Image (cartoon, rainbow, N blue to C red; front, top):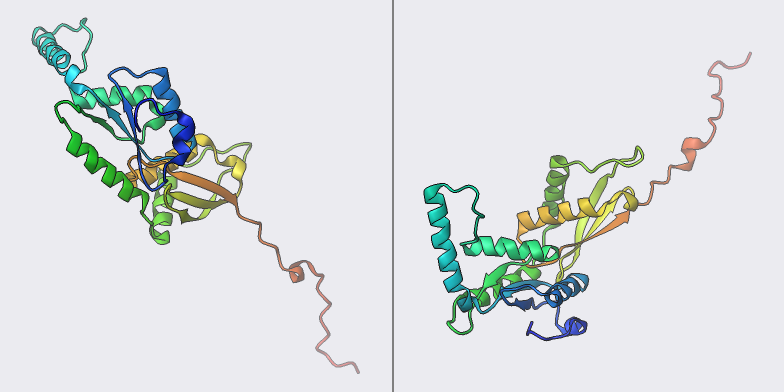
Length: 236
């Protein structure tokens, strides 16, 4: 997404195309607002930190300082970020609501990682079109529930019956369960993270829609009073 684009126009972009949210080496309040709008409108996203060439010298000096700190074993000195992985974690901590979005560092001036950015766009776009077979989806969710049982509330426990994918771009799954009010936001995020771990969905919002399964209607004859059995002995 080009810098300066207003969040109100995010809805104009096709859902099958991932947005590219560009930030500088400092994350501004505007960046956070745009990130929040991306989450609100359920868009796929890649976070790009541009102008990395301006940071290369500072990173080189920080790396030298970190090497020296470890050499003299100075535990009081603050640890410095010296790798792209560490900087990526820093970005995701500040844009925690976009923790599903990959972070790529680029430089339009030097061409650093531009090819990787194009690969990421193609990859996320392909992830958006995934269709998960129902049997595999239910097996994955069953394993996730067994690993971490939902917390009971007021003596009631959340029960899952069945799940099916109803939409791609964004991937949307309908979950049949006993009570919608027991499906907490924390457990919803846990299951979404488990689906990402199993099927990828990097850069994609995973939408889980709970739906209470209607209670089974008991047959009427179960409650009907039994008629007295006829005597087998013939009357004399």
